[in-house]
Amino acid sequence: MKSFALVRADDSDKVKIALHDLERYGHIQFSATPKCIEPNYADELLVSIMGVSLRSKCNSAALVELNNHAGAAISRLKKIHPPAHIIIISPRHKMFEVLAVKFSKYPELDRTFNHQKSPQSV
Image 1 (cartoon, rainbow, N blue to C red):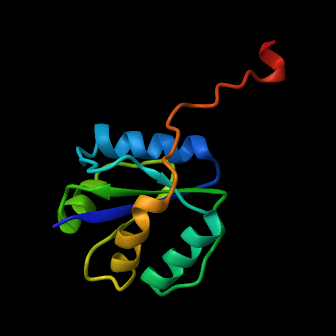
Image 2: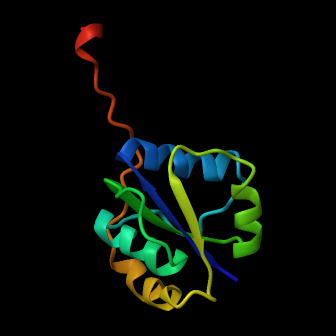
């Protein structure tokens, strides 16, 4: 049974690192390319799924469909420490069906990093 991972962070590089960590260290398989979603929508999803108010808003977010069962993904996620807030959305969540329908409409996430030189290194 498939599930989704919602990744929220302060910036896009942290989202990309978290996605990399899920694959490399969490051994979680993506069944599709990660998609960009609006940070405000990601915050709304978090509140809807977790049933708690936000401590802080995110500035960047992604959604990825997983090949792994939600329980296995959660277990593996607990063993790594990605630099982003990640929640696993399973078919038992009421937002799952909405995300399943909308997923293909979201733009693909560009997973290349923004290598910007700091003013001190120039």
